Length: 99
Image (cartoon, rainbow, N blue to C red):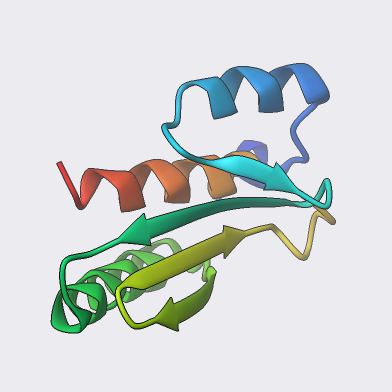
């Protein structure tokens, strides 16, 4: 794995990169979080299955909460103790699923 991707982001990097992602926000300083709403439960589950495929590909797995038509993704890098470039890459890839 690229060591640069698993380095903790500085405040400036975090602010800049979060600004390039739509709907993602910081939570408790160590997480980035986004809520996705879908028209149906099957649509929610289809999205989660696609997220799982990307997570396996990147070997970086989000916390996933499914509440009927609402899916919440939370990302952090446990090994680095906070938010890294890999979290940002993952967030961008998950957003691309809906484009």
